[in-house]
Length: 333
Image 1 (cartoon, rainbow, N blue to C red):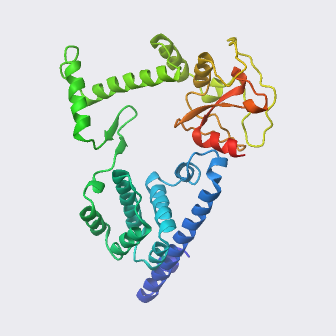
Image 2 (cartoon, rainbow, N blue to C red):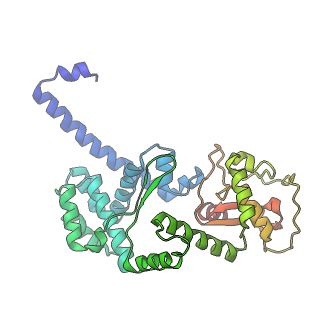
Image 3 (cartoon, rainbow, N blue to C red):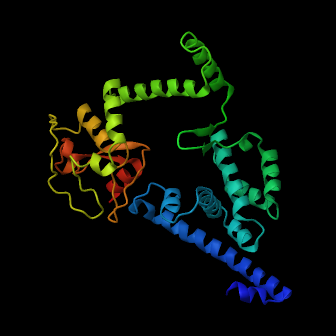
């Protein structure tokens, strides 16, 4: 139907047509939610090269982050409260109010350390029926003011600057003030950005040292410079590794000039770990058969391409960097 046909409608026809389209939209949304649930249950997003359904919706299905989040939130609460699907279809609730309620439940569980009961979730859904977004916010804030604290937010201002909004407790603020006092001789009036940079550098150094992958400042500058002038494909050129779905792992080519001694155990040498991290650009090396590479840097794990139990060694050409999700998926397969 084109715009000319719409303009030719009578007022009553137009209203009836919109009412029909609204009903269809609700039906389609509910249908979409159940399809997303099936993708979630089958974990198809992992096979597609993503670590979560959210990432799959944003990068593959091209949803905005806000829309993807609302769809997943609705999916979660509908799975827990079947009545929510009926309310969504009837128009008593919408994706926005369901998303707000699911976010409230998640924050409440995190705050109390206890799961919200199914009966309580049903009561929450009942309380938001036929309410506007603002009314729902007021209802939830009345139930638990702490759970309605502002959400953490990241806003990109330009190519260089990012605005970070977080809500912290007084204990964290006291630590910030203490750090400010400790560095006052070198910087009399540090910004929060300065303080965060100092704290993160110290935390990263501590964790890297604990994991045995600490790199000296000179090495870090050299690697950073190299990474800034290289694409991910080039970073892996020296050590090509086949990790695509269905691809058989063959003898791995080792053309790097670096040579590492390998113990006949699961133990992975520190130098091997450092080389793999640099080669992978500190991200997962999983590649789907369609060429989609996982870009996750969350919970990275060193993985034996050929399992140690199957005769695989801890040599450089048998070690890859995988995120927790794809490493677990590989183990299950």
